[in-house]
Image (tube, rainbow, N blue to C red; front, top):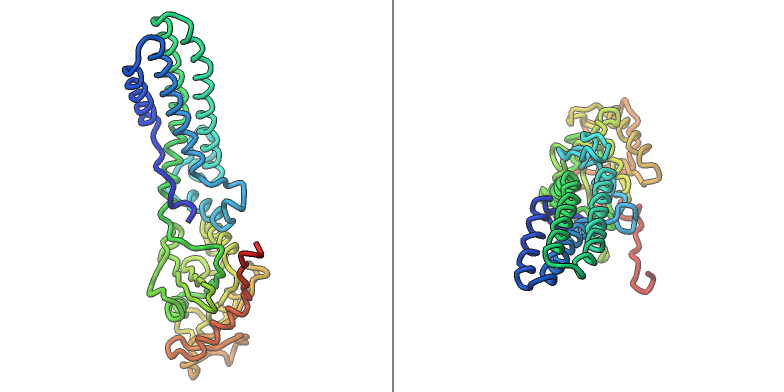
Length: 348
């Protein structure tokens, strides 16, 4: 996952202390003008390099080859929904801090890195052909300016570290793997289906915009790894009932899915009438556009209490997760709908 290896971002105070303490040690190892030059070189390099490393540790959100649209939308939703607040200097409402605020903060930190180099280049010549006292005076002026530059991006550094903490421990969902998204109202058998056909065993991916966690499972067919995703709290109710963050999270899932299974409970025992379930199916199908959507009626073992006498069930498949009837047929139909062909090394 692209965010898991992000390093801790230092605070401005930590970075200044690190730079100046190492500069002091460098100065003690030498004498005269050389000591002042070494101190400035050490301090400016540590500040510039560390600030640059903060920025380059992050992927470039401007390029899809570095950040898949799924992760872009996901990061934006998470940063917007979390307690992370954008710096006031960004001009972005702290309650709506997202990827734009993060990119702006990273840009400010890169500015500070370049500024530290400029200060070094400005003052280093002054330390070469003068007396030690004057050189020390110039070096102290340079240190004061370096500290001021770092302090100017203190809020940005704090925000970047908070963003890193919000994103780095996300459970991994691989947007490059062929993916079956399972939708439908609660209690229609979605999680049971995912667990039954994969090795999920109740595995959930915890995200801040879901109350139960996204169900996640994997399986292999013909040496191809597929992932199944169940999204409670997102695709188990009509779009008009989702809040802004949940809507954005669904937008991320649009970039993830290769096939959609919408499960129905024709018995109505899930607590939702079949008519409402079919309306949800239609809304999901409309939102996901060209994505193959298969309608699956579950609980065929309870057909005696199905309510399809008064409704057009219009299901592509019928199955029972409870007894296993037609479960494999449904899975194979989803895999066939994806029609995934891996790229071979000599084709890339």
